[in-house]
Image (cartoon, rainbow, N blue to C red; front, side, top):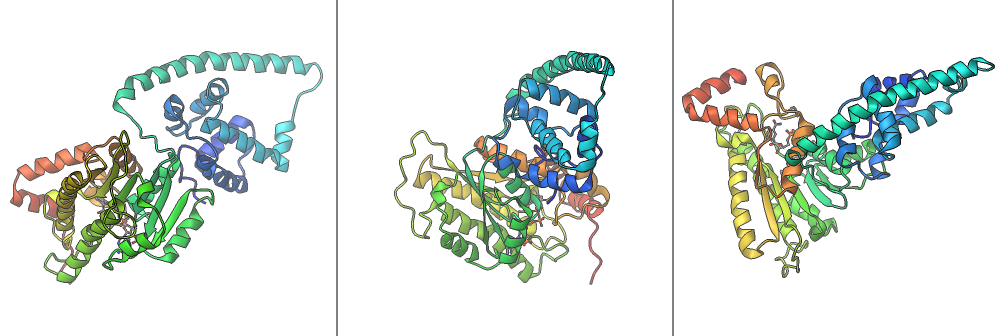
Length: 420
Ligand SMILES: NC(=O)c1ccc[n+]([C@@H]2O[C@H](COP(=O)([O-])OP(=O)(O)OC[C@H]3O[C@@H](n4cnc5c(N)ncnc54)[C@H](OP(=O)(O)O)[C@@H]3O)[C@@H](O)[C@H]2O)c1
């Protein structure tokens, strides 16, 4: 199992080594593997940390932070991920012969008094550092709070297409880490089995298989799944395709791109806003006071301009963004206040869709952060999300320069493929 599925709870090898040093034991590879599996199940056995505790769990661990968090979590945050880490690491090492011997090594005789005095002084000195550190962290968290609202997804159900890799996978992991149950789609049953094997059995995840390039396949999979669309708070169309290097004048690749990127979205929206069986939506349930159920479509900032060698990708995303706006208007007329639509137009992030070499590397946003921004924005009811903001600003700046400048700049950033 990977050690980076749920960053709030899991640790990489370096952080594990720090935890070992903190506990006074040597790192052991086999124990790290067991620790990874144990911590990967933590989001499903414990309530997600909230508020300041969550903020403290976010940055990577250093020896200094670990020592502070060890003390702070003992005093104020008993369920904190760092307590889970230290308790689990200690338990594993206590069952390992050499580590157990290291842990049980102790002084005897008169040296006990010196050892106890040293222990007391170390704790006092630690507290003298930890308390001001914690006060500063709390002040920073309070100041940043109005600008950084993180969506609480506990008890929510979210559907996401394309969870096998890329952004869809990060959206799924972020939802699971935040306490939501996920219905995810992948292309084939084999892909569903492979993904399920990568995740803890306790993860509240249901996987469906549908090849979105086949017209009607997504609608059929959703209808046949028995999932009640009305139990879902959010449906995210994330799966998308790009025929890299394909000519915009090639009908086959353009047709395939439009099917996956646009028409599969129409199938998803019809099911999500309908009665689940493919029929017309029944009478809108009484949802007074309930927040709108949200359709989220992942378009692209590329929808604002053309691009060589994308085989209709940018056109399909332009159509998706505009279609989503129309869908929102139709849904408002049909059932006012019941549905909301969020259009996401991200900049570049590393994925199977982007060659991350050369100049492009400096333009990539951290993908997990893009996923978090999408969930936060959608849960807050935003209609358009363009993470990161600076990439959208850059794109709009380039757009002002006109088509010739765009062709020149895009040609430099993404050199055209040589003719076949
Ligand atoms: N990467 C970027 O910089 C960027 C920028 C703006 C917008 N986006 C959008 O972000 C979304 C996610 O893309 P990504 O960047 O994460 O790319 P990715 O790594 O290539 O992932 C694409 C996902 O879509 C799925 N998919 C593609 N064709 C499918 C089909 N016919 N049937 C079922 N599933 C299919 C893939 O499943 P398989 O594993 O089976 O292929 C995969 O899960 C896309 O809508 C993309 O347009 C990406």
